[in-house]
Image 1 (tube, rainbow, N blue to C red):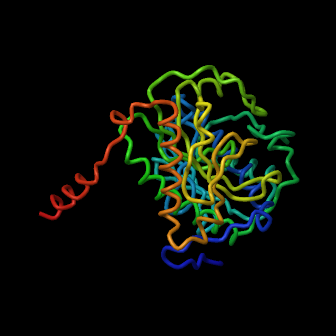
Image 2: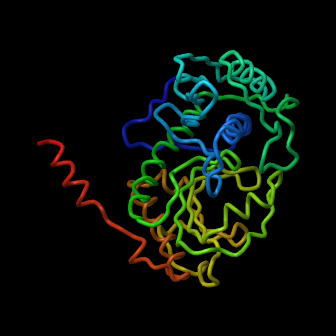
Length: 321
């Protein structure tokens, strides 16, 4: 089995064209698993109950309730397995390999039934145009282990920077979490104020879900692997609602730009990966785009921001005594 051989601190090269077929297939696999989480969890504000989480092996649902306790589904991108575990001590797995979405769907639900986990989902992809029902999708069937490991290793590094960025905010803030609808890793800060009703439309997504997700004023940032229309992995940052002057604000690093088409600031992943200090320039992007949103929308930054680094040091000393 091929293993990731990145050196410590190195960020992987990600070229959309090298793995777009694997991306398309795994995106649909994560949608199936994500919809299981959607059905099993109580609804949380802004659809936080549906997300996956970066863990030491790949992407995880975290614990989900079922009638016999809790269970969890993990994408393991080191050993290339999908693993289902339960609080009864049972475990099932299926291999991550070239296989159709239809086969993945059938195999996964067979495994769930063998564990006495009774769950049904709406078997059509969300947030994608021309969606093929999972049970009929024999088109998407690619899986390149090396390219998938590369993408996951990028997620690990980005997750750590976003986690540090999140720590500087004492207001309401989302976890660092992975949305399977758009296949992006994101973290969102909230001003505490209501937002106007969202009017945007997304394929195969009820309008009421989008309206609840954007019911509060936000500054959000994330990482997205690209698509055929924009074949480049990139970081993004946006505000909702955005003040008229938001787009004109200076942000860092120099490679960042505002996309009128996307309505958000963007930073190519390549600029971060090739930098001598990837973590530093990504943090500069996260901080400066947040400041652009907070300043132009007049957030109460004094009340919402914090620096708890002194506690980190003090608690570290305490633990060694």
